[in-house]
Image (cartoon, one colour):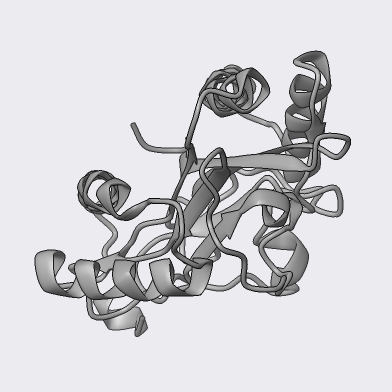
Length: 233
């Protein structure tokens, strides 16, 4: 975004991000009815793209659409696993980055088909661990990216899971959001980021963050994903 169009009204920026997330929540509610056995991940992704455009007017996704089922739920965002077909008793997650009214949303949820207790516990633990990590961030205003990543890993282990992501979140904002120098590290909640998450951009704007929780059980070959705003809501 050009410097003369940057919004410095922090309440308006937070409201824009929250409105985008609320729109993503509504989109996911519609996407849930598309989830069914017998459809491939890529086919479901195409159906979601069409639904987002047709029902919500989404013209851009600021990152690739991620649909992962079965053993692919073990894979981190940057992987490109083979296209799997959703099974009757499957676990799967969606990770979408739709843009609403020039604001980026980034939202992830996990779904279970069937009644497998381990998969259901995994799905339910995601929101719990997200909430605990968010409360820790709010209680420690000087926390760094590396420290919050460690917190996410610890919470996962205490719940009996492994943290499956190389990162536990990233920057989000107006589309396209401002990039940090050495962005691979400073734009992410990850072990290599020693900076405080609440430090502002060079422009003086507040940095807003997405928190993402990726839990895996490599023995059962299942994983789950939960993602939404850390700094708003």
